[in-house]
Length: 183
Image 1 (cartoon, rainbow, N blue to C red):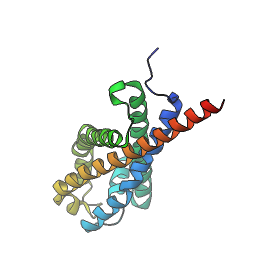
Image 2: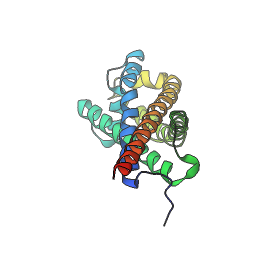
Image 3: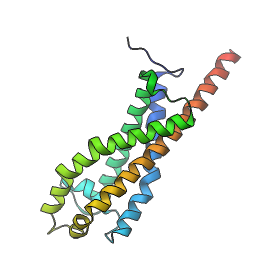
């Protein structure tokens, strides 16, 4: 059996990680809409682009893109929580450590997933649908700006996720110690 380096049960680490991922996802939610505004494209364009490869368009593509993005944020948070408990060196025991671990996680997600998915799937899909997707030319003309903004957002996601995770872990650990002491 694998050693678990946490005072909290595995399921609690998964739950805290999942909620922390959602906190990080919501932390960048409005910023994504601000990037759309800055690029002078329709609100929700980023999320729409996430939904387009599934063969849907319009408002439904935006809604599906938002949901998929938040599910991804929750999944990354859950994996973060599990890894924090499985590996002693990754254990989050302070706010600073949580935020640094979160930043590293955000950067790993950016370089290992966001860039390849953008370059292999999203950009070619936008190029091929430029006739039906009105904002395609603006998005393609600003790819470097979008990539830099996405890098910043992944760092912000990591800070929010890791910081919230650290606070929640400390709170739950103290709560469990108090409960054990009172028994």
